[in-house]
Length: 435
Image (cartoon, rainbow, N blue to C red; front, side, top):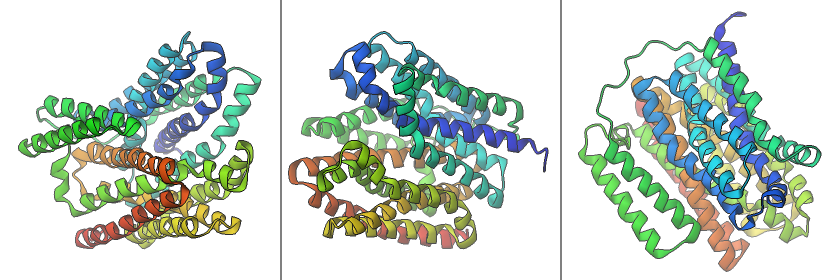
């Protein structure tokens, strides 16, 4: 085992995972300096929206391609696209050019997380996969925890351009390790017609949905609903659709999709506005609010590292139930009291929910779907979590703007209770599948 090449391939996946998690936290620290140099302050939101939109849209596309062309080559291609976008972002001369570079980054980034998890499912059996998965989620948690500090230090002492170049050593070394040491078992790729019409409908629906979450326009919302219905009907009519509806025949997958959306909405909707809540409730400045979020980040990192191992030892369902209970408890603390001690407990609850929930969902669906559809299934769960986070943040943010923090926390509690209820069919499906 000392010379097991999988260890070097795992290190490559960990580096790439660290890279994509770091990207999600360090860029915000560089934006003020970027605007000073490039101008275009009215386009700040697009720097983030272009990346996140491309990330959400292309994730299922990469997963579909991985099942058709092979996970290894498609994973390496997504890393190459991401690094190309990062290098471009570091050398831009205007804000519109930065937005375009960020969109290219997002196109590559959409494949990094789901394909990394897909590759792991091919490399290891159930027991070893959980151990490997714990390295990935730990890397993700550490990057999220230290990203703002790293980003601020680089921006203050060097240049905002180095924020984007930071991706190159992590991604470059990771890609080299994968190229040299990643060897996957030979599988016959899917030989089915590519659903180009379904892909087109999916992209149109995602663009409309992201536009609606940004503006909350009834007209755009109606368009999003119409496109979503068209995509659903089209997918039901095809034997091999782009949208993985055939996987819904697995009760575990059905349960995981509901949980991914609800947990994504509740967790990220709550966490997104937590710094603002701390600033308003306790009169903290932005730096102090960031330091006050340490309980949330530490509980997230620690529970992320434990989740895969716990899932194998006691089962997937109990770990997901614990995550949902943590989310419920967190919002209860926030909804009924603003005492600093209870706010600290709320952070621990939200951190546990984020750390414990997503690895068990991924590991569970990877055990029940056909191996030739692992890429599509894994990317679907990651996509639905992202979609839930986008919609949840929009809903909670709209309620915060119109009615304040307490109604927003009340909606978060409803989402958490709905996720807890969704654990019932998920657990039943696991019992039926005997996982």
